[in-house]
Length: 329
Image 1 (cartoon, one colour):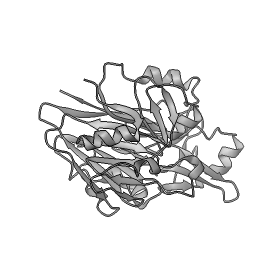
Image 2 (cartoon, rainbow, N blue to C red):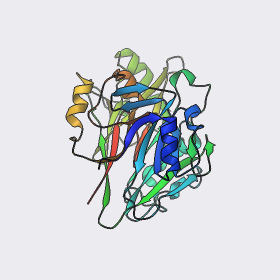
Image 3 (spheres, helix red, strand yellow):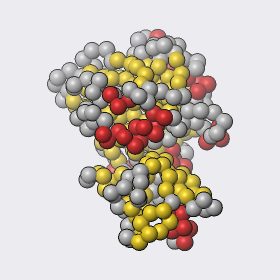
Image 4 (cartoon, rainbow, N blue to C red):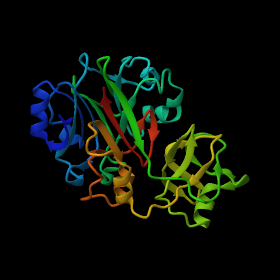
């Protein structure tokens, strides 16, 4: 039986909670506040890839039902100080779903330090960064929810640890359509969510000046090879007066970045990269920037559905990427 992953009414989600289901739920804050306490975690976002296509909704929620566990999943908050213990505390065989509110200390700490967390990459960690409707940016804070208490937080991360029976194992897959383009190699002197001065093809330069001079399409991310995996860093804003560029994920020294090559047909590329319909996906999410830049409202990206988020987690923070998890025997 296919795992339940669907955009549904608040009343239907409440029925699932009251039936004792373990759920990961995404929705607008007002919708999430209508849900009863139970075995669920949640995060704020009103953008979704539903079965019928890309959807913006403030009065529906996206539900991923968690099943096949060996023991009841554990739900808890982590603050910025305890978050580095997340993988150490995870089940030896299973997976963890993590939701972090955007722009929080947890978001910054995870983005910059997750690769160094104890037991990271040894236990599957998947999740997303909670956000808000883009009309509400700067007015409303992204939040996560611990459904077992009904508590909302704009500072802490929330996690569901799912232990699996010994004959099953969880696998995370990352779909990144972007590849480094043919432009200059860019290296940064420090890690962080913003940068100005850098090295471009080995010469001292300024990134904001370079992007302007080359008329770079800033919908394209910077791409670098992180130990064999191509990882995107999306451009959030350019302050030309301050000669500074802000990113949705941190850049790191020691890596060479290039502006991504443009995609001729985003939707077709996604269809070609996604798993076939026979794959039972337990959880997935995609990026709000993919939703916006590729005008996905009303369009489908294969059989994969889920929230469209302010960042994706596939072990570490990702941008403009789709991540999904399946459980196999």
